[in-house]
Image (cartoon, one colour):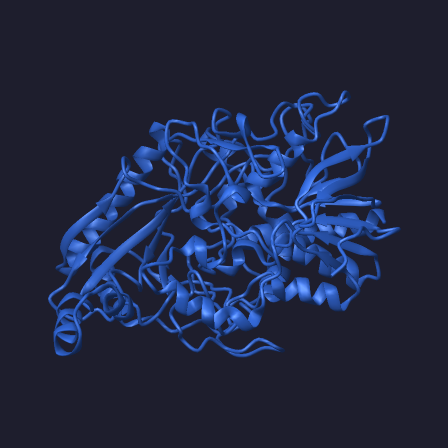
Length: 529
């Protein structure tokens, strides 16, 4: 394919993940000339079954399945806690939705007014009602299956587009224990089809949702990238943007300079530019785009580009039961509890409890990891699988300026640019929240009669790889990077569509909110064109 720039483009979108795909589809469908620049390759959908088979073989880690790692994806992590950036991201058309879990919940009303309600964190520049219609549109666009039965969720204006997936067998075990403890459970909205729609088929239960859904039932951003292409958009893959250039006054972006596999560079001009490269690469590109007008990086007059990096933290406990639990029959969560989500005060963050359907190794993983065969292998699998059980959970991280993404002073990538340096640490706020989550999880497992064999708590917690907060949104240009319309305060034609604009993280998986904000940004961009 030709990777030369398009003349007379109305919009240049940088990043072909869910935000970039939705914006490109909306604007191209309106008749605008759209170019999408994606750093990674376009993967062949016909290869997904092969990638699925590769993913369950012990010799291949999840990152290698989608070709992550190596000099192209070099990074650093110099904070108090090491951040394994490449463990769960994908560079390519579709982005990390190619291997995400697929759970899609709306943020709670309290998330939008956290500082006002609890005295910690920050308030969003608008309330839940502002985003509510965009949430509904995002659920329709992604094809969300759900029962709308969550008593703790914010109000809805209509049911989920698709019926919910039924509770798993182990969900029924948890239901009895939770009822005894007075803990309410409910279904999980999933961005996977329970019934077929258009060119996408219904889930057929492969169970390999992470890192590969071979059937296409689980949503990924290629759905909207392909729709955008059909509407006339042009997608240039393997075109990592090196920097953004602006006019003499510093008021508008004039071009995106990108590299190509043959070693040449090109410059794409456009009327409007959209950064949709995620919570790490978005601030990195702005910092790489320094100039005499913006010596600290583009759109960084506040000094906050890269600051307030947040992730969700994992808390969990698990063990075994003296009865079958039928784990790994379902590759995603079907039951949760948001009962402990809203914060009573500023002493702890939000907690989202998840009842896991994939505790312990799957029979396929066990068969491929052993060195025995025949009856001996069957006996080993029978004895060691099928009785595991676990409760997981996501925990909120408070926005703090010292957690950040910056340019590493020495290490560079294959193009000679400084790699992202993730500076990450936990506070007492997060530790208290994880400790409370662990208490609840152990109570549930004890009530269930499980032998608790492990706990993931404050000291050995890890990230959920939800990169948020590095170009935060607000009304004050001195305290934020983008305004409520997702446009940077400093440049009138540069928008950011990403979880990087989140002022607070909540404890909900962020993709539905990313999609809602992308649709909101698309409306504002369309009004300016």
